[in-house]
Each structure stands twice: as structure tokens, then as C-alpha cells.
Length: 434
Image 1 (cartoon, rainbow, N blue to C red):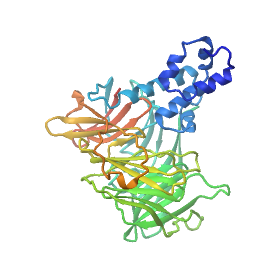
Image 2: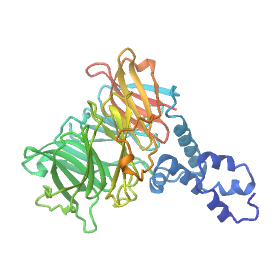
Image 3: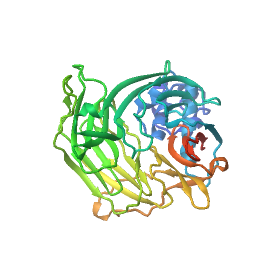
Image 4: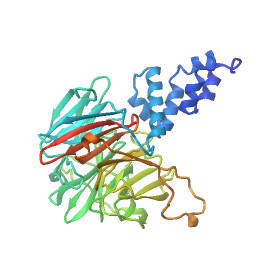
């Protein structure tokens, strides 16, 4: 078909095709098979399925062969097509008794877990039959809250490295005393790009602090803070000076002038005036708390790109910022099947593990709807009744347990849960959902 075209032109033609079209094109002729032995088209197709920039995908697949990139792409496509089937049947379920497990994160790609134990141990574990400990580190007891509503007095940020050798490195250690005598109890925290955001009680009010993780060109870290009126919210960092805060009643975007250098003699943040550049009171609210999708930045010191999803009991909100982060569109959907607070939320999918009367532990899968901007904002309904694609399933061996924390990996459709069936009786469950 392309016999008279150079490989470079054929590569440009194939770049941008979906994963299944690329897979089918491999067998059309020797030239397309040769061209598709390059990583580029598969990277682009994988970025499109995962809604990630190229830099994020290449970081996870650093050093991967063409065959591995192709396999990852096909797996991601399969997850995309099957995540929200009406009836889901998990391929594989593993459970491990883990009395001291406190919190867990699953790294992109689904092969590594970062686990926090009650005794203050931070571990990297490889997802395999034995759940082998690869590296462990110790920190002060009680610095990482399991529940978002739990408060703590210390906050640590760790860099997690997988390749070439697994490693954990502490980047930031902050205590409330570092912020001055007025500061009390950290509550929520988020990281995007090179920015850490956290909120705390400060002189009887609520304060949100933004702080750089890696020092600037002068070797100095920068930070600033502002006072606001949301005591328990989801934090989305959109840039070094713009942050979105959401709770069950409203969504707001706050802007501050800039960050200020942190001096050796005074680590307390500069409290600055903030401007609310977007605010929306939610017309559909339900008891409980929302979770937000992970941040996607174009580069380390850049800003957020693409939509953000907020999911909680009864509602799903999609916020679409403009490229310059000055304007925002909001779409809201009814999801009455979701009754749990803090479901796991990704860029494209969500997962809620919830106790339902008469059924025990039920899993609800959610596929975020695509949102198209409306030219006529007056005609857009504030709450859409359009169906959000959803599925559900029950795992008999764990349906009597109560979920404590839920995490998902969109690359593989893998989920990790902390489950509890009484005081000090906890388990880790790993589910390959599709």
C-alpha cells in the first residue's frame, strides 16, 4: 500500500492511529511492520488512551523494548474497552493478611506498591505472588494519616525511583512548628509538578500553603500561603500560584501573586492575599467527601493540562480549564449508585468499594464521560442526566470486609485495597479487574 513512500512518511501517516488500528496495520505489508517496530506510534497511541503527556509515559516505560511498549498499549486499550461493562468479572484476586498496614499507593504501570505501616515503615514492594519487599525506609511514627479527615503534625515527601534501581529518598520534612506558633495539624495534601500543597489550622482559621519541592536556580525553596473557608476539601494544584479546592458544596479556584523564598531563619510561609477566579455552588450535593483525579502537568515547572474529575457520593463533576488557566467549564452528572466517600479516581476511570445493604462489599466501576464544550452556556443544563458508564461486581472471598482505602492503576486495570474486619485485623487485596 505504501511501497512508493519513504518510511518517514509512512510513520507520519501511522502516528495518531488508535492502538487496535496500529495492531491490525502490522500485518498489511513488510514496510508497515518495519515502521511499527519503532516506539513512536505506540507511545502516541498509549498517551491518547491514558490521557497522559508523552513525558509521563516515557518516564514509566524508560528502557522498555518495542514489544513491551506494544504490550502495554494493548493492555491499556483492553482496560479502556472493558472497564465499565455492566457485569465485571475480575481476572485475579489476591489477599494478604497485614495487621500493621496503614496506607498504600500503586505506582503507574501497576507493578510496584508503596506501603506505609503503623510502626512508621515505608516500603516498596513488587507486585508478585510473594509481594516481596524490595526496599524499606523508616520515619517518625504518625506522620502519614490514613484517613483524610485525620490530622497530623508532620508531613514528609518522598521521591520514589523504580529504574535503574528501586529507591526511596526523602525530599521534604515539615512539622507544624516550622510554620509558626499559630499552625496546628496538617489535614490534606497534594503534589503536582514541583509544587506541594497542604492545608492546616492556622491561628483559628484554615490555611493552605504552596511550597516548591526542588529548589530554584539559586538553591532556594519557595512558598506562600493564604487563608480560606474550606475545612475539608480536595486539592488540585493547577500551577505554582493557582489551586482548585472542592468540597461537597462548592468548587473554587484560588490565585495568589507568587511564591516567596524560604529563609534559613524563618520557614513560616508568607501569608498573601488570594483572588477567587472561579467559584461554583453545587446544586446537587450528597453527604460524604469527594476524591479528585491525579494532576497532569506539561512539565515539572509548568501547569495542569486537560480536564479534572471529582467523584463522590451521588455526583461526578468534570472541570475543564482553558489553556491559560483563566477560564473554567463545569459539567455535573448524577451517579446515584456511588455512595462511598473518597472513591479511587483516575484520569479516565473511577472505582468505589462500598458496603451495600444485603450485598456486603460491592465494587462500582465508573468511566468518566467525554465532555464537549458548549458554545451557548445559557443552554447547558447544570446537572446532566446523561448516563455515566458504570459496572459492578462482588468478590465473594472479601465481601464481608470493610474498605479502608482504595487505589487504582489505569495502565493495567489493577486495584489495591486495605480491608478491615475488626480492630487490628487488616488485609491487603490486589484485584486485576479486567
